[in-house]
Image 1 (cartoon, rainbow, N blue to C red):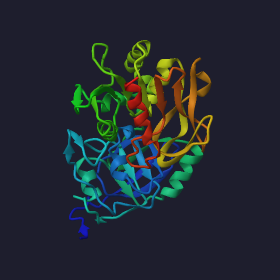
Image 2 (cartoon, helix red, strand yellow; image 1 turned 120 degrees about the vertical axis):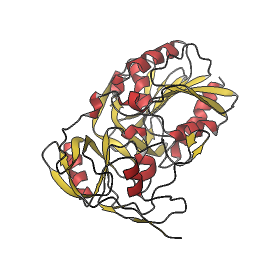
Image 3 (cartoon, rainbow, N blue to C red; image 1 turned 90 degrees about the horizontal axis):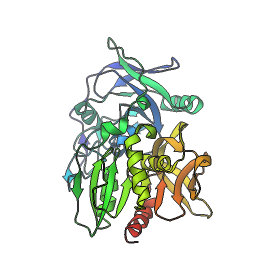
Image 4 (tube, rainbow, N blue to C red; image 1 turned 45 degrees about the horizontal axis):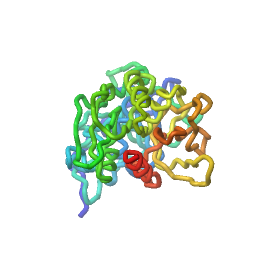
Length: 364
C-alpha cells in the first residue's frame, strides 16, 4: 500500500556555503538549524538510511549524487539483540544532508515515516533543490571542502571536524557483551557499524564490544577486531598503544576502515588525508599478486601510505580508481586490515568472506 508523508518540515530556504565562497540556495526539508562540517559526496543509488546512521559520517555534511531521495521513506528504529535491526547506529550521524530532489511521498514495506520526519526528530538539517551534479564536480576539482548550512539570522563559522577526536564522540562508553559463541572476539568500537557485530554473531562468535580507548589487557578473548569510525586515525593514540600491546602478544587482529588505518599506525606505517575520500557502494579493488577484484562499499577520508609499511608487512588490496591502499597484512598471517567494508551495509557483499577468514584466525 502506498504510504504518504503526513508530515513535512516547515517550508524555509537556506544556503549551503563552501569555504571557497560558493553559495548554493536550497529548500529545507530537515530540522531548521544552521550547522557546519566537511562536505563530502556519496554516489550510492540506495541506502541512505544506512549511510546516514553510519558513525563514519560524524562531522560530515553529506551530499547524495543520486537525484531523487526520500521515495522509500525511513525504517523504524527497532532493536534485536540490543542492536538496531535495520540501521547502522541508533541515530543519524551525518551533520547535514544535501540532495537534488526530495520526495515527500514514500512507498516501502518497512517504512514507518518520511525521511523529513526522521531528520526533524534527530534535529539534522537538510536541503533540497541544490544542483548535486555541479556540487560534486566542484568537490572533484577542489577536493573535500569545509562547508556550512546557514539559515537566515543564524550564522555559523566553518568547522574542521578532523581536528577533533570524532571516534571518542561515537564510541560506546562501557563494554557490552553479545552472543554465546564458542570463540570470543573483542571489538574495539571506534564508531562501529551494527552490521559488523551482526556479521560476527552470524558466524557463531561471542562479541565483547569495548570503548575506543579501553585497556583490554586483562580481558580473555581469542581475537581482536578494530571497527570503522570517523576522522583522523592519529587522534586515537590510546587505541594505537593498546593495539601495539596486542600485536606483541601475537593476538589475531582484523582492522576495518579506520581500524585498518589504526592497525597500520600501530605497525609503524603512516596515514594521510585523501583529496576526495572514498564514499560509495561501487569502489573496485584488486587483490595484489592475483586477479581477484571486488566491488566494495567504502566511507573514509584517510588512507595508509604504502611506502611506509615496515618489513614483514605488505599491501593486500589496491583501489582500481586511484591506486590507493585498500588493505594490509603481515607475513605471520596474524594481522590483517582492509580499507573497505566487508559488512557492506549498504553495498555489495563481495568482501563478506573476510569475516570467515577472521574466524579461521581465532581457531589457529
